[in-house]
Amino acid sequence: MSPRATPLALLSALTFSIAACGSPERSDQSAPPAAPAQAAPTDVAPPPAAPAQADWSSLNALVGQYPNASKLIEDSAVTPELKTLLGAKYETLATHMQTQSPLEREGSVLYTSGNKAHEGGTNAAYILIDPTQRALEVGLWENGKLTTYSTQGATLAKPKDIQTLIANSAP
Image (cartoon, rainbow, N blue to C red):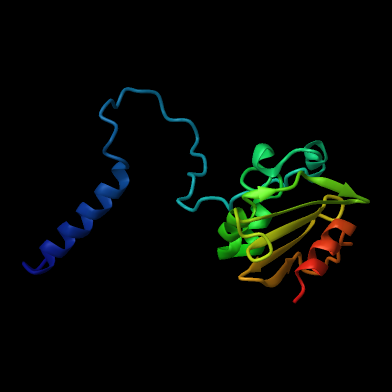
């Protein structure tokens, strides 16, 4: 062997020796052999499970209650959908429902309306909920102008009280 080949041969032998020894973590060589290797968990987390859809039929029990008392807007089966539907306007809804009517039902539609304290007709809102369709419609009056937000593809029948509210606010 040439003097230059020796370090390369030693390095190769050392590499193979280390690989053959296995993990240096076990210091007790007299321990019984480990159980057959199982697949090690990967560092990749499994995809999150889809959140369970809330049961909107639970809203029927809220009929006759004021939304503030029942937490209809801030903590009910429809809260996540209200936040998604309204986005940045969710807080406007909460503000515009300070003075409110109780949740009522007409046909399959649950509804309520309200206004910002001392600003009825200018800053107001209504909410329509159809638990069977899992559909929402929210009307927001901001400075007297009505904007409607609704679940895509859904058409909710407006109860008579809401029709009257809309008609009375028209310029």
